[in-house]
Length: 464
Image (cartoon, rainbow, N blue to C red):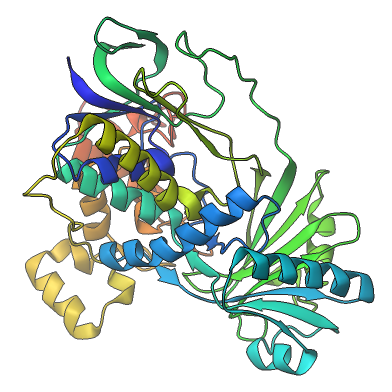
Protein backbone atom coordinates (compact mmCIF):
# COMPACT_ATOMS: atom_id res chain seq x y z
CA UNK A 1 0.00 0.00 0.00
CA UNK A 2 1.67 3.25 -1.17
CA UNK A 3 -0.55 5.66 0.80
CA UNK A 4 -3.27 5.74 3.41
CA UNK A 5 -5.01 8.68 1.71
CA UNK A 6 -4.73 10.06 -1.82
CA UNK A 7 -6.24 13.51 -2.44
CA UNK A 8 -7.07 14.27 -6.05
CA UNK A 9 -6.80 17.96 -6.88
CA UNK A 10 -4.57 20.62 -5.33
CA UNK A 11 -7.13 23.42 -5.28
CA UNK A 12 -8.18 25.31 -2.14
CA UNK A 13 -10.33 22.38 -0.89
CA UNK A 14 -7.67 19.76 -1.66
CA UNK A 15 -4.98 21.77 0.14
CA UNK A 16 -7.26 22.36 3.13
CA UNK A 17 -8.04 18.62 3.38
CA UNK A 18 -4.30 17.83 3.15
CA UNK A 19 -3.60 20.26 6.01
CA UNK A 20 -6.32 18.84 8.26
CA UNK A 21 -5.28 15.22 7.64
CA UNK A 22 -1.57 16.03 8.15
CA UNK A 23 -2.35 16.46 11.87
CA UNK A 24 -2.66 12.66 12.09
CA UNK A 25 -0.30 9.72 11.61
CA UNK A 26 -1.28 9.04 8.02
CA UNK A 27 0.70 8.61 4.80
CA UNK A 28 -0.85 11.19 2.45
CA UNK A 29 -0.29 12.41 -1.10
CA UNK A 30 -1.92 15.13 -3.22
CA UNK A 31 -2.09 14.65 -7.00
CA UNK A 32 -2.36 17.88 -9.04
CA UNK A 33 -2.32 18.10 -12.84
CA UNK A 34 -0.87 21.63 -13.06
CA UNK A 35 2.61 23.03 -12.41
CA UNK A 36 1.41 24.68 -9.21
CA UNK A 37 -1.17 24.11 -6.51
CA UNK A 38 -4.37 26.22 -6.39
CA UNK A 39 -3.94 27.12 -10.06
CA UNK A 40 -7.72 27.39 -10.41
CA UNK A 41 -7.93 30.36 -8.03
CA UNK A 42 -8.58 33.70 -9.71
CA UNK A 43 -5.61 35.96 -10.42
CA UNK A 44 -7.35 38.62 -8.31
CA UNK A 45 -5.82 37.90 -4.92
CA UNK A 46 -8.74 39.32 -2.95
CA UNK A 47 -11.98 37.43 -2.50
CA UNK A 48 -15.08 37.90 -0.35
CA UNK A 49 -15.58 35.77 2.77
CA UNK A 50 -19.35 35.28 2.95
CA UNK A 51 -21.47 34.64 6.04
CA UNK A 52 -24.39 32.70 4.53
CA UNK A 53 -26.63 35.74 4.27
CA UNK A 54 -26.92 35.76 0.49
CA UNK A 55 -27.11 31.98 -0.10
CA UNK A 56 -30.48 30.75 -1.33
CA UNK A 57 -29.78 27.19 -0.16
CA UNK A 58 -29.80 26.42 3.59
CA UNK A 59 -26.95 23.89 3.34
CA UNK A 60 -24.65 26.32 1.51
CA UNK A 61 -25.57 29.04 4.00
CA UNK A 62 -24.62 26.77 6.89
CA UNK A 63 -21.28 25.89 5.28
CA UNK A 64 -20.54 29.58 4.62
CA UNK A 65 -21.42 30.59 8.19
CA UNK A 66 -19.19 27.87 9.63
CA UNK A 67 -16.35 28.71 7.23
CA UNK A 68 -16.66 32.43 8.03
CA UNK A 69 -16.17 31.63 11.70
CA UNK A 70 -13.18 29.33 11.09
CA UNK A 71 -11.30 31.24 8.41
CA UNK A 72 -10.18 34.19 10.54
CA UNK A 73 -8.40 31.86 12.96
CA UNK A 74 -6.60 30.14 10.08
CA UNK A 75 -5.65 33.48 8.47
CA UNK A 76 -4.28 34.83 11.74
CA UNK A 77 -2.28 31.66 12.44
CA UNK A 78 -0.67 31.60 8.98
CA UNK A 79 -0.39 35.40 8.57
CA UNK A 80 -2.64 35.40 5.51
CA UNK A 81 -3.91 38.89 4.52
CA UNK A 82 -7.44 39.13 5.94
CA UNK A 83 -9.75 42.01 6.84
CA UNK A 84 -13.26 41.92 8.32
CA UNK A 85 -14.86 44.74 6.35
CA UNK A 86 -18.61 44.23 6.72
CA UNK A 87 -21.01 44.38 3.79
CA UNK A 88 -23.99 46.35 2.49
CA UNK A 89 -26.74 44.93 0.27
CA UNK A 90 -28.36 48.11 -1.04
CA UNK A 91 -31.93 48.80 -2.20
CA UNK A 92 -33.00 51.80 -4.30
CA UNK A 93 -36.76 51.17 -4.61
CA UNK A 94 -39.64 49.59 -2.72
CA UNK A 95 -39.41 46.30 -4.60
CA UNK A 96 -35.73 45.92 -3.69
CA UNK A 97 -36.49 46.88 -0.07
CA UNK A 98 -39.05 44.07 0.05
CA UNK A 99 -36.43 41.63 -1.27
CA UNK A 100 -33.94 42.78 1.39
CA UNK A 101 -36.53 42.27 4.13
CA UNK A 102 -37.10 38.69 2.89
CA UNK A 103 -33.34 38.01 2.97
CA UNK A 104 -33.10 39.58 6.43
CA UNK A 105 -35.94 37.44 7.86
CA UNK A 106 -34.48 34.31 6.25
CA UNK A 107 -31.08 35.07 7.80
CA UNK A 108 -32.66 35.50 11.24
CA UNK A 109 -34.35 32.11 10.89
CA UNK A 110 -30.92 30.64 10.04
CA UNK A 111 -29.46 32.13 13.21
CA UNK A 112 -27.03 34.53 11.51
CA UNK A 113 -26.00 37.26 13.97
CA UNK A 114 -24.69 40.82 13.49
CA UNK A 115 -27.00 41.73 10.61
CA UNK A 116 -29.17 44.87 10.50
CA UNK A 117 -31.62 46.67 8.23
CA UNK A 118 -30.33 50.26 8.14
CA UNK A 119 -31.51 53.61 6.79
CA UNK A 120 -29.64 56.10 4.50
CA UNK A 121 -28.15 58.11 7.39
CA UNK A 122 -26.41 55.05 8.80
CA UNK A 123 -25.28 54.00 5.29
CA UNK A 124 -23.62 57.38 4.74
CA UNK A 125 -21.88 57.02 8.07
CA UNK A 126 -20.34 53.59 7.38
CA UNK A 127 -19.70 54.17 3.64
CA UNK A 128 -19.32 57.88 2.80
CA UNK A 129 -18.04 57.26 -0.76
CA UNK A 130 -21.28 55.50 -1.69
CA UNK A 131 -22.65 58.66 -3.26
CA UNK A 132 -26.01 57.36 -4.57
CA UNK A 133 -29.61 57.50 -3.41
CA UNK A 134 -30.49 54.46 -1.29
CA UNK A 135 -33.78 53.67 0.47
CA UNK A 136 -32.45 50.92 2.70
CA UNK A 137 -29.57 48.50 3.10
CA UNK A 138 -28.92 45.18 4.76
CA UNK A 139 -25.71 45.55 6.76
CA UNK A 140 -23.63 42.60 7.95
CA UNK A 141 -20.61 42.91 10.21
CA UNK A 142 -19.51 39.35 9.39
CA UNK A 143 -18.32 39.77 5.80
CA UNK A 144 -14.58 39.90 5.18
CA UNK A 145 -11.99 39.83 2.39
CA UNK A 146 -9.04 37.45 2.23
CA UNK A 147 -6.12 36.62 -0.06
CA UNK A 148 -7.27 33.21 -1.42
CA UNK A 149 -3.99 32.17 -3.03
CA UNK A 150 -2.02 32.94 0.14
CA UNK A 151 -4.54 30.83 2.07
CA UNK A 152 -4.16 27.86 -0.30
CA UNK A 153 -0.34 28.17 -0.28
CA UNK A 154 -0.36 28.28 3.54
CA UNK A 155 -2.44 25.11 3.80
CA UNK A 156 -0.16 23.35 1.30
CA UNK A 157 3.16 24.49 2.82
CA UNK A 158 2.18 23.43 6.35
CA UNK A 159 0.89 20.10 5.03
CA UNK A 160 4.17 19.64 3.14
CA UNK A 161 6.21 20.36 6.28
CA UNK A 162 4.17 17.69 8.05
CA UNK A 163 4.99 14.99 5.51
CA UNK A 164 2.30 15.29 2.80
CA UNK A 165 3.70 14.36 -0.61
CA UNK A 166 2.63 16.71 -3.44
CA UNK A 167 2.79 15.20 -6.93
CA UNK A 168 2.51 18.00 -9.49
CA UNK A 169 2.03 17.63 -13.25
CA UNK A 170 0.28 14.28 -12.79
CA UNK A 171 -3.07 13.68 -14.45
CA UNK A 172 -5.32 11.07 -12.88
CA UNK A 173 -6.52 8.73 -15.62
CA UNK A 174 -8.55 6.21 -13.63
CA UNK A 175 -9.47 4.92 -10.15
CA UNK A 176 -10.40 1.28 -9.63
CA UNK A 177 -11.37 -0.70 -6.57
CA UNK A 178 -8.66 -3.14 -5.61
CA UNK A 179 -8.50 -6.09 -3.23
CA UNK A 180 -7.48 -4.00 -0.21
CA UNK A 181 -8.19 -0.46 -1.33
CA UNK A 182 -7.87 1.50 -4.56
CA UNK A 183 -5.60 1.50 -7.57
CA UNK A 184 -4.96 4.93 -9.09
CA UNK A 185 -3.41 5.34 -12.53
CA UNK A 186 -1.85 8.66 -13.59
CA UNK A 187 0.05 9.69 -16.71
CA UNK A 188 3.29 8.99 -14.77
CA UNK A 189 2.68 6.40 -12.05
CA UNK A 190 0.43 3.77 -10.50
CA UNK A 191 -0.52 4.05 -6.82
CA UNK A 192 -2.50 2.09 -4.29
CA UNK A 193 -4.23 3.56 -1.23
CA UNK A 194 -6.84 2.88 1.44
CA UNK A 195 -8.89 6.08 0.97
CA UNK A 196 -9.43 8.42 -1.99
CA UNK A 197 -10.67 12.01 -1.61
CA UNK A 198 -11.67 13.31 -5.04
CA UNK A 199 -11.96 17.12 -5.06
CA UNK A 200 -11.98 17.50 -8.86
CA UNK A 201 -15.55 18.51 -9.85
CA UNK A 202 -16.81 16.89 -13.03
CA UNK A 203 -14.15 14.17 -13.32
CA UNK A 204 -15.44 10.60 -13.37
CA UNK A 205 -13.55 7.33 -13.17
CA UNK A 206 -14.33 3.62 -13.10
CA UNK A 207 -15.14 3.85 -9.37
CA UNK A 208 -17.89 6.42 -10.01
CA UNK A 209 -21.26 4.72 -10.20
CA UNK A 210 -23.10 7.66 -11.75
CA UNK A 211 -21.56 9.61 -14.60
CA UNK A 212 -21.72 13.31 -13.76
CA UNK A 213 -21.75 15.87 -16.52
CA UNK A 214 -19.77 19.03 -15.92
CA UNK A 215 -22.26 21.85 -15.45
CA UNK A 216 -21.98 25.01 -17.50
CA UNK A 217 -21.26 28.27 -15.59
CA UNK A 218 -24.35 30.02 -14.24
CA UNK A 219 -23.10 33.42 -15.42
CA UNK A 220 -20.07 35.44 -16.46
CA UNK A 221 -18.34 37.82 -14.11
CA UNK A 222 -16.26 40.79 -15.26
CA UNK A 223 -13.72 42.23 -12.80
CA UNK A 224 -12.37 45.76 -12.91
CA UNK A 225 -9.48 46.70 -10.61
CA UNK A 226 -9.62 50.37 -9.66
CA UNK A 227 -6.67 52.50 -8.58
CA UNK A 228 -6.17 53.45 -4.95
CA UNK A 229 -8.16 56.72 -4.81
CA UNK A 230 -9.55 58.12 -1.55
CA UNK A 231 -12.55 59.57 -3.41
CA UNK A 232 -13.79 56.19 -4.65
CA UNK A 233 -12.28 53.69 -2.19
CA UNK A 234 -14.81 51.64 -0.20
CA UNK A 235 -14.39 50.24 3.28
CA UNK A 236 -17.26 47.71 3.00
CA UNK A 237 -18.20 45.07 0.47
CA UNK A 238 -21.21 46.45 -1.43
CA UNK A 239 -23.79 44.40 -3.38
CA UNK A 240 -26.39 45.91 -5.72
CA UNK A 241 -29.01 43.70 -7.35
CA UNK A 242 -30.16 44.91 -10.79
CA UNK A 243 -33.67 44.43 -12.17
CA UNK A 244 -32.55 41.87 -14.79
CA UNK A 245 -30.88 39.63 -12.22
CA UNK A 246 -27.40 41.07 -12.71
CA UNK A 247 -25.34 41.85 -9.61
CA UNK A 248 -22.82 44.65 -9.16
CA UNK A 249 -20.21 44.12 -6.45
CA UNK A 250 -17.56 46.45 -5.04
CA UNK A 251 -15.01 45.41 -2.43
CA UNK A 252 -11.82 46.88 -0.96
CA UNK A 253 -8.64 45.26 -2.28
CA UNK A 254 -6.21 44.05 0.36
CA UNK A 255 -3.35 45.67 -1.58
CA UNK A 256 -5.14 49.03 -1.84
CA UNK A 257 -7.77 50.21 -4.31
CA UNK A 258 -11.16 48.74 -5.12
CA UNK A 259 -12.36 45.58 -6.82
CA UNK A 260 -15.50 46.13 -8.90
CA UNK A 261 -17.36 43.27 -10.56
CA UNK A 262 -20.48 42.74 -12.64
CA UNK A 263 -22.15 39.34 -12.78
CA UNK A 264 -24.30 38.85 -15.88
CA UNK A 265 -25.80 36.08 -17.99
CA UNK A 266 -24.39 37.72 -21.12
CA UNK A 267 -20.87 38.84 -21.95
CA UNK A 268 -20.51 42.56 -21.37
CA UNK A 269 -18.28 44.98 -23.25
CA UNK A 270 -15.91 47.23 -21.34
CA UNK A 271 -18.10 50.32 -21.60
CA UNK A 272 -21.18 48.35 -20.48
CA UNK A 273 -19.28 47.05 -17.45
CA UNK A 274 -18.07 50.53 -16.47
CA UNK A 275 -21.57 52.02 -16.83
CA UNK A 276 -23.01 49.38 -14.51
CA UNK A 277 -20.26 49.95 -11.94
CA UNK A 278 -21.02 53.69 -12.07
CA UNK A 279 -24.47 52.94 -10.64
CA UNK A 280 -22.69 52.24 -7.35
CA UNK A 281 -19.57 54.41 -7.78
CA UNK A 282 -20.71 57.29 -10.02
CA UNK A 283 -17.40 59.18 -9.69
CA UNK A 284 -15.16 56.60 -11.35
CA UNK A 285 -13.64 57.25 -14.78
CA UNK A 286 -11.72 55.06 -17.20
CA UNK A 287 -8.52 56.58 -15.83
CA UNK A 288 -9.23 54.89 -12.50
CA UNK A 289 -9.09 51.44 -14.14
CA UNK A 290 -5.89 49.52 -13.46
CA UNK A 291 -6.81 46.13 -14.94
CA UNK A 292 -9.69 44.10 -16.37
CA UNK A 293 -10.27 40.36 -15.93
CA UNK A 294 -13.13 37.96 -16.50
CA UNK A 295 -14.13 34.59 -15.07
CA UNK A 296 -16.99 32.12 -14.87
CA UNK A 297 -19.52 32.30 -12.04
CA UNK A 298 -20.76 29.06 -10.46
CA UNK A 299 -23.36 28.54 -7.77
CA UNK A 300 -23.74 24.74 -7.66
CA UNK A 301 -24.40 22.97 -4.41
CA UNK A 302 -21.08 21.71 -3.08
CA UNK A 303 -21.75 18.28 -1.67
CA UNK A 304 -19.58 15.72 0.09
CA UNK A 305 -20.60 12.42 -1.46
CA UNK A 306 -19.53 9.77 1.06
CA UNK A 307 -22.03 7.11 0.00
CA UNK A 308 -19.08 4.94 -1.04
CA UNK A 309 -17.00 5.65 2.04
CA UNK A 310 -17.52 2.09 3.24
CA UNK A 311 -15.34 1.32 0.22
CA UNK A 312 -13.00 4.22 1.07
CA UNK A 313 -14.12 6.78 -1.53
CA UNK A 314 -15.20 10.40 -0.88
CA UNK A 315 -16.10 12.78 -3.68
CA UNK A 316 -16.62 16.55 -3.45
CA UNK A 317 -18.99 17.66 -6.21
CA UNK A 318 -19.94 21.06 -7.55
CA UNK A 319 -18.40 24.50 -8.00
CA UNK A 320 -19.46 27.54 -6.00
CA UNK A 321 -18.50 31.22 -5.82
CA UNK A 322 -17.96 30.90 -2.04
CA UNK A 323 -15.55 27.96 -2.33
CA UNK A 324 -12.80 29.82 -0.43
CA UNK A 325 -15.22 30.61 2.42
CA UNK A 326 -16.42 27.04 2.81
CA UNK A 327 -13.03 25.31 2.33
CA UNK A 328 -12.27 25.20 6.10
CA UNK A 329 -15.66 23.71 6.98
CA UNK A 330 -15.65 21.20 4.08
CA UNK A 331 -12.11 20.02 4.92
CA UNK A 332 -12.95 19.71 8.60
CA UNK A 333 -15.96 17.49 7.85
CA UNK A 334 -13.97 15.24 5.48
CA UNK A 335 -11.13 14.94 8.00
CA UNK A 336 -13.50 13.91 10.82
CA UNK A 337 -15.07 11.23 8.62
CA UNK A 338 -11.71 9.72 7.63
CA UNK A 339 -10.12 9.94 11.10
CA UNK A 340 -13.13 8.32 12.80
CA UNK A 341 -13.24 5.46 10.31
CA UNK A 342 -9.50 4.79 10.12
CA UNK A 343 -9.12 5.20 13.88
CA UNK A 344 -5.78 6.99 13.46
CA UNK A 345 -3.82 8.84 16.15
CA UNK A 346 -2.82 12.50 16.40
CA UNK A 347 0.72 13.35 15.29
CA UNK A 348 2.69 14.39 18.38
CA UNK A 349 5.27 16.42 16.44
CA UNK A 350 2.74 18.27 14.23
CA UNK A 351 4.05 21.69 13.09
CA UNK A 352 1.08 24.08 13.01
CA UNK A 353 3.06 27.03 11.74
CA UNK A 354 3.92 28.41 8.33
CA UNK A 355 7.56 29.21 7.57
CA UNK A 356 8.32 32.93 7.88
CA UNK A 357 8.20 35.13 4.79
CA UNK A 358 8.88 38.82 4.22
CA UNK A 359 7.00 41.53 2.31
CA UNK A 360 9.42 44.39 1.73
CA UNK A 361 6.66 46.92 0.97
CA UNK A 362 5.04 46.31 4.38
CA UNK A 363 8.24 46.57 6.44
CA UNK A 364 9.50 49.55 8.43
CA UNK A 365 12.80 51.22 7.54
CA UNK A 366 14.63 49.51 10.40
CA UNK A 367 13.18 46.09 9.43
CA UNK A 368 14.27 46.66 5.83
CA UNK A 369 17.81 47.57 6.87
CA UNK A 370 17.95 44.51 9.09
CA UNK A 371 16.93 42.06 6.37
CA UNK A 372 19.17 43.71 3.76
CA UNK A 373 22.09 43.22 6.15
CA UNK A 374 21.27 39.49 6.18
CA UNK A 375 20.60 39.20 2.44
CA UNK A 376 21.54 42.00 0.01
CA UNK A 377 19.03 40.73 -2.55
CA UNK A 378 16.28 42.28 -0.41
CA UNK A 379 17.81 45.66 -1.26
CA UNK A 380 17.31 45.18 -5.02
CA UNK A 381 13.83 46.18 -6.21
CA UNK A 382 12.60 44.10 -9.17
CA UNK A 383 8.96 45.28 -9.34
CA UNK A 384 8.94 49.06 -8.83
CA UNK A 385 5.15 49.37 -8.74
CA UNK A 386 4.64 46.98 -5.81
CA UNK A 387 8.15 47.19 -4.32
CA UNK A 388 8.91 43.49 -4.74
CA UNK A 389 12.58 42.65 -4.23
CA UNK A 390 14.86 40.03 -5.70
CA UNK A 391 15.09 38.43 -2.25
CA UNK A 392 11.31 37.88 -2.15
CA UNK A 393 11.28 36.34 -5.64
CA UNK A 394 14.18 34.01 -4.84
CA UNK A 395 12.47 32.98 -1.60
CA UNK A 396 9.19 32.28 -3.44
CA UNK A 397 11.08 29.87 -5.72
CA UNK A 398 13.05 28.15 -2.93
CA UNK A 399 10.16 27.69 -0.47
CA UNK A 400 8.34 24.37 -0.07
CA UNK A 401 6.24 23.87 -3.23
CA UNK A 402 8.05 26.92 -4.62
CA UNK A 403 7.19 28.81 -7.79
CA UNK A 404 8.31 27.20 -11.04
CA UNK A 405 6.46 29.50 -13.43
CA UNK A 406 6.10 33.23 -14.01
CA UNK A 407 2.50 33.06 -12.77
CA UNK A 408 3.67 31.25 -9.63
CA UNK A 409 6.04 34.12 -8.82
CA UNK A 410 3.34 36.69 -9.56
CA UNK A 411 0.81 35.06 -7.24
CA UNK A 412 3.28 34.56 -4.39
CA UNK A 413 4.89 38.01 -4.45
CA UNK A 414 2.46 40.42 -6.14
CA UNK A 415 5.03 41.33 -8.80
CA UNK A 416 3.64 42.64 -12.16
CA UNK A 417 0.30 43.66 -10.59
CA UNK A 418 1.19 47.35 -10.59
CA UNK A 419 0.50 50.10 -13.11
CA UNK A 420 3.06 48.85 -15.66
CA UNK A 421 1.62 45.29 -15.62
CA UNK A 422 5.08 43.76 -15.76
CA UNK A 423 6.56 45.90 -18.56
CA UNK A 424 9.52 46.75 -16.31
CA UNK A 425 9.99 43.55 -14.32
CA UNK A 426 8.79 40.54 -16.35
CA UNK A 427 12.15 39.98 -18.08
CA UNK A 428 13.95 40.17 -14.73
CA UNK A 429 11.56 37.61 -13.20
CA UNK A 430 12.24 35.24 -16.13
CA UNK A 431 16.00 35.64 -15.63
CA UNK A 432 15.72 34.90 -11.89
CA UNK A 433 13.58 31.82 -12.51
CA UNK A 434 16.06 30.57 -15.13
CA UNK A 435 19.00 31.12 -12.80
CA UNK A 436 17.39 29.49 -9.76
CA UNK A 437 16.09 26.49 -11.72
CA UNK A 438 19.26 26.12 -13.81
CA UNK A 439 17.35 26.53 -17.06
CA UNK A 440 17.56 28.67 -20.16
CA UNK A 441 15.23 31.72 -20.19
CA UNK A 442 13.52 30.23 -23.24
CA UNK A 443 12.49 27.21 -21.13
CA UNK A 444 10.57 29.32 -18.58
CA UNK A 445 6.78 29.08 -18.91
CA UNK A 446 3.95 31.41 -17.98
CA UNK A 447 1.75 28.86 -16.19
CA UNK A 448 1.60 25.52 -18.05
CA UNK A 449 3.62 23.18 -20.21
CA UNK A 450 2.87 24.85 -23.53
CA UNK A 451 3.02 28.49 -22.43
CA UNK A 452 6.65 29.48 -22.96
CA UNK A 453 7.13 33.21 -22.42
CA UNK A 454 10.09 33.54 -24.81
CA UNK A 455 10.01 31.70 -28.12
CA UNK A 456 13.76 32.17 -28.63
CA UNK A 457 16.53 34.70 -28.19
CA UNK A 458 16.77 37.39 -30.86
CA UNK A 459 20.29 36.23 -31.66
CA UNK A 460 22.43 33.45 -30.24
CA UNK A 461 26.19 33.83 -29.77
CA UNK A 462 28.55 30.93 -29.30
CA UNK A 463 30.92 33.16 -27.35
CA UNK A 464 31.29 36.80 -26.40
